[in-house]
Image (cartoon, rainbow, N blue to C red; front, side, top):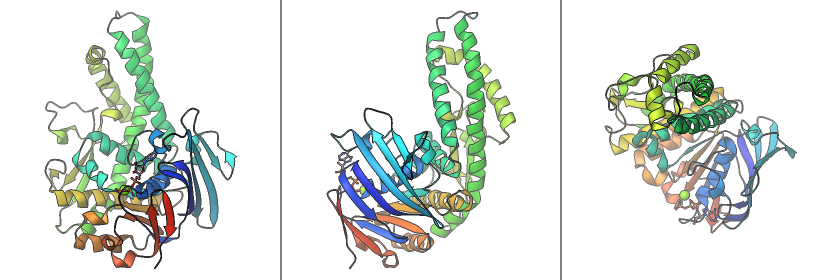
Length: 386
Ligand SMILES: Nc1ncnc2c1ncn2[C@@H]1O[C@H](COP(=O)(O)OP(=O)(O)OP(=O)(O)O)[C@@H](O)[C@H]1O
Ligand SMILES: [Mg+2]
């Protein structure tokens, strides 16, 4: 798929802007702080209803305004759809498809697919479990948009269960609060197990593409792999992630594990007032050869790894998602890569249906990728094809 046109109103530093995009490579150039990433972010938001930079949508609304609009004309094969998102500070957000309101904002998912790669993606390899969960969950929502509702349900159940746990401390074992806890447990187990089973499945489907992408990007022949490290598996030493590896993707087996673990940690949960096991405490274990990527591999290898994760995501979406070939967005990436990886990356992406590249200086981008070019200056755009 590709986006033919993007219109923004009161989004980030744009009061109003029109961006006509082409298939193939679109280059956005401009000095720091002019609004290049903001454009990339708007397209990614239409694909995932999440930003690659912030959680929540309020920072996307232009300062001092109460409503931002993102409008995207998306084309897949011979069909075009006009998608519109209205982000509001005071009232609920709204979405429209071809000018009709959708019952829920998330109904807009599935029309635009996008994979963004930016320097922040090093965090997937190097930092906290939350970065890796966000990576796989974003991919899952693009592969099956209905999972978006499952994630919202899980968050709601988790929040209510945590509230209950905080008050449960003072209850006796026969009190009604603890009976309510048991019924929340059922929901937590059912919804949480669906998330865990889906992550297991998607990590497995991603794995062959990850090896392929890593081999195409990196110099050394070391094979990357992914495992799910689960809070459902008890470990003695927190540091030894490998032994907490989940080995089943079967939903009823996961439910069983979940139920057992939950009863084992019950007292601890009541003592601490939070939910200690479930997909919100899980992690992806990224390995390079036999070593965990985090804490072991070099900076350059981490770059290759993060890039390979994103290229692999694009391959999987291309193969399995409803709208096919995702838009590849490379935000500020070329300036960070050495010349070998620059040209390898260029040849890997040049045949993608649509690519959006941001760069402070066009010279950082390999010349075979130079085509449609826009200059971004302080929240306004001009075509800059020379
Ligand atoms: N909600 C907002 N309202 C108004 N301005 C905003 C808002 N959010 C961000 N900005 C401004 O948008 C500007 C452009 O940000 P953006 O990240 O797109 O720049 P960029 O062109 O990608 O720069 P760089 O090359 O440094 O990555 C920043 O100066 C920021 O202050
Ligand atoms: Mg930027």
